[in-house]
Length: 159
Image (cartoon, rainbow, N blue to C red; front, side, top):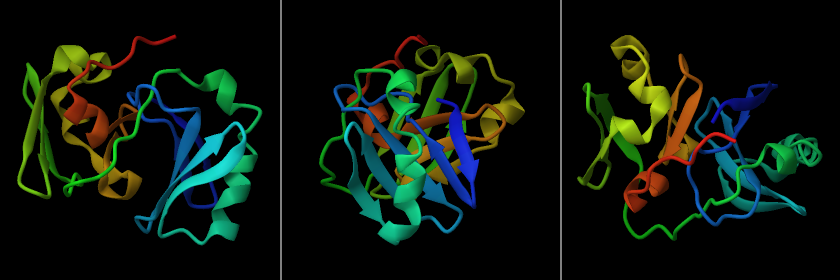
């Protein structure tokens, strides 16, 4: 999903695929900190390194925007292993993600249209987001979570 807002060193965004999760937004800072905040009602759902008073105002400002932008059908599973991203690569047919715990996820690019239609350079320029649990392609403004990839379901259709 596209970046919703960049403000004061923070990037606010939705992951493309988190089925059955209530409306929420992810917030990253350049320092690798991340949080997840629910939008209705606005509350902190998960915090990995943020000082709460610094980050919550950005989420609160999205309360009126978030539910309209939200794509229903998102779900976060409990972390049992280290699902952080170690490496990402794409060929013409597959997206392959190596995880920190040694597992490798491979899914068809057909499941992720933005990546499928991107150039090799666009697909090759990625960065870790969501505290390492997500992948951001800045040239495409696309985000995927390792949680969604591990579930093995195609990305939701654009609304």
